[in-house]
Image (cartoon, rainbow, N blue to C red; front, side, top):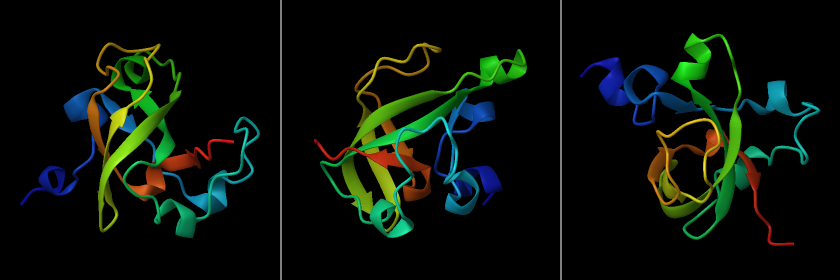
Length: 118
């Protein structure tokens, strides 16, 4: 099995976009995030019905040496041992590769915010 087959998430090369994985110790103090990134125990405890925010990068912008990213909400439809599936709950501004309602696969380490409904 090749490495690409083992990696179940979108990649710039294969899909034209990727979702950024977040290491808490390097991202926690980023000034552009409104809220601190949830702790790993919270990110790994998300379940069906939860709404989470992810960071998306696009191959076209990376290739053109522009690096806009989008922070978009995803509604989780299933969770299985750290493998999450959900649908995009936003309209992307920087790409036509993704559409609202599109199914995505991601990992708890991709989550930067959990919507609390407050």
